[in-house]
Image (cartoon, rainbow, N blue to C red; front, top):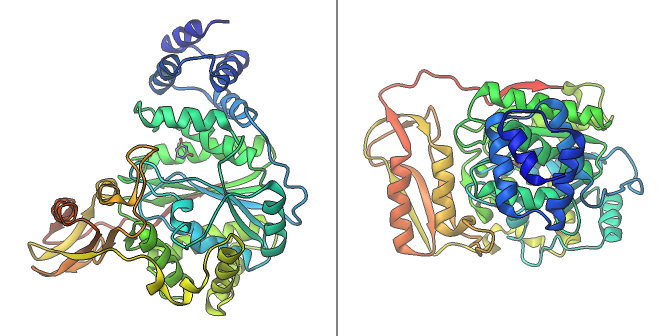
Length: 434
Ligand code: URA
Ligand code: CA
C-alpha cells in the first residue's frame, strides 16, 4: 500500500477502505508517513468529506493507536464530558465537583489550551502546586476516593490524534465534521469512560459556525459512541459570545468558584446544570433530567460541590486555601476598563476575536511551545442584549504589559457591536441529540 494512492483516491472523491485508513494511522503514528503527506490527505478529506463508515474507522484506528485505559477498577458508572472548544468555557471546573459530589466517578482527561480556546489543565495550574502528572494507580485511587480526577492526554493515549490534531491546527483542517468527530471520540474511547456527554458548540467562537453543521457533528459522535457501547448524549450550545464573564486562566477559575458559591454568571450555571443533569441520568443516579437538575442545584446550595472542589485540588497537590481566599491567586499588574464609545444595546460580541485578544495578552498559546501568563485576560462587563451608556465599561483588560493592554482595549472595542436596538433571541441550548 502506498500513501500516495490513498491521497489520490480521496482527492478524487472516492471512499477509503478500512485497511487504507488503518495503514495511514498506523504508519503516521510510527513516523513512517511525513507530515506533508498527512496534511495533503486531511485537506483532501476536508474537501471531499468522509462517510459515516470511514469516520467510524478513523475513530477506532486513532483510539487503538495507543493504550486503551481500563477503568474497571473504578467503582460505579464512569461519566466523561467533552466540549468541542469555546471561549471562556469553564464548565469542567464547575461540573466536575457538582457531579462528583453526588458520588458519581468523574475521570477526566483534559488538554491544554491552543489558539483562541482555553484548556482545563492550564486553568487548574492557577492553584499553586496543582499537577496532572500521576501514575495510573494514583489516577484510579483518586477517583475511587474523591470521585474526581483530571489527567493530561499524556503518555500513550490516542497518540495518532495528538499528532494529527497538532497538524490540523496549523494547516486549516480542523473544522471538518469527520475529523472533529473522530478526534474527540477516539480520545474518549481510549480514556475508558462508560458514558459520554458532549457539549457541541455552535457560533462564531466555535469550530462549527452553523446550527446544521453542529447537529451533524453531534449526530455523528453519538452514533460512534453507540457503536462502541458508550452511551453518548450531545448538547448543542451557543458559542456566539464567550461563556460567562471571565476569559483567561485565573479569571475563569475565580468564575468557577463563584458559580459553585451560587453567585456565578447565569449562562455558565445554566449550561452546567444542563450538561450535568445528563451526566447524572446516564450514571443512573436519577430517574429523569428534572430530578437530576434538582440534585445538582442542591450540591451548590448545600456547599457540597465547593467542598468537593477543595478536596480535588488538594488531592492533586494544589493549595485549596485559594478557594476561600481568591485574592491569593496571581493578579495582573494592570486592570484597564474598556469604555464604550457610544450608547445602545450590545448586539454582538465576536467570540473568536475576543478569544484571540485574551491569547495575545498571554492567556493562551499561539504555538505549543508558548508559556502562558495565568493572571491575564478579559472580564466582560456587558454581554449580548445588555444596554450600555457612552463611557460605561463594557469589559476590563487584565494585563502585565501596558502596550499589550492598550492594543487589547482597542481590539475589544472593535469586536463589540452596539446598535440602537436588540431584537434577536439566541438560545443558550439549541437542542439535544441522543
Ligand atoms: N477538539 C478536539 O479534541 N478535536 C478536534 O478536532 C476539535 C476539537
Ligand atoms: Ca468564562
